[in-house]
Length: 104
Image (cartoon, helix red, strand yellow):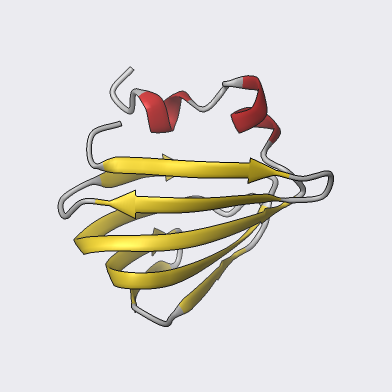
């Protein structure tokens, strides 16, 4: 997906992903069964949830509960580390079109 690069490691009980995100990129609204912890290593991200929004900067950690709808807009070039539990089965199977082709 334009403006989003990821490196992923899957273990028996979790998925860890390093995202490199370019200003203006948007991870479209989605949800997943996995609990998610996002550690913003650099830059600034806008997380949009059903009940509001949160701007996270370098050093911030954002918790996203299981099945919570969310979208992420990249406000500045950013690097983030995500940890998901359980492992992202959709990523393992390749059923992650919202990240590969968000318009289709």
